[in-house]
Image (tube, rainbow, N blue to C red):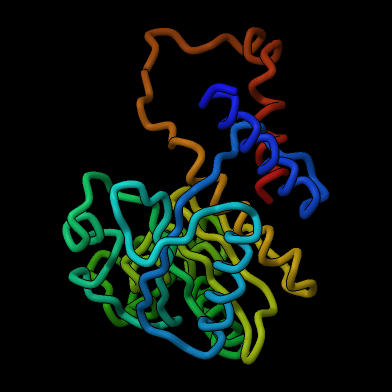
Length: 259
C-alpha cells in the first residue's frame, strides 16, 4: 500500500468517525486539523468548555498541540464579556510574531457571558436603538474608538441588538471569530460570530451534540478559504441568466446549513 493509499484510508476512517457522531451529512472536503489552546482570561465555565471542546477534537481524530507551530490550523483562546483585550495580547494580531510562525492560523476566541449579563446588554442596546433620534453617547463602551458608536448604530439598525452586540464583543476582545458561550456553571448556548455578521446559535441542552457542532463549525472554517478576490464585471449578470444558475439555491442551502 502506497503512502497516498494509507492517507486515503485514514481520511476515510476519520470521515466515518465524524459520521457516527453527527447525524447530518458531512462535506467531503472537511479535513483533519491541528488545534492548540492558548488561554486568556479564564472562568470555571471557560475551563469546562476548553476541556470539553479539546476532548471532542481528540475523539474525532484531530491533533492537539501544546503550543502553536507552523502546522497549527486553529488557535483557541479566551476572554470574558465586557473585557477589553489589549491589541498587544490579541492573538489575532500577535500570534504569528509571538510564536514565530510562518503563517497566521485561524484564531477563535471563547468569550464567557452569564445569562444575566447578556440579557442586560441586549436590553441596553435595544433601548438605545429604539430612540428617535439615536444618541451616539448611548453606544460609548469601554475600549472603543471615537467612531465606534456610529458603527454600532449602523450595525444595530441593520441587524438588531444582537448584531450590535456582536460588533461590540469583537471590538473589545480584539477578535473576529468569537464563540460567545452563555451560562453560569454549565453552558446553555453558544453564538458564533464572524466578520460577515453571522450569529448562528448552538444549543447546549445535549453536551455531546453541543461540543460536536462547535468543533464542526471550527473545522469547517479551517477547511475553507474566504472569498476575497472579487472581480467587478463591466456588465451586470442579466436577471434571466441569474435565475437559471444553481448559485442562488446553493447559497440559500449553505446559509441553512450554517444556521
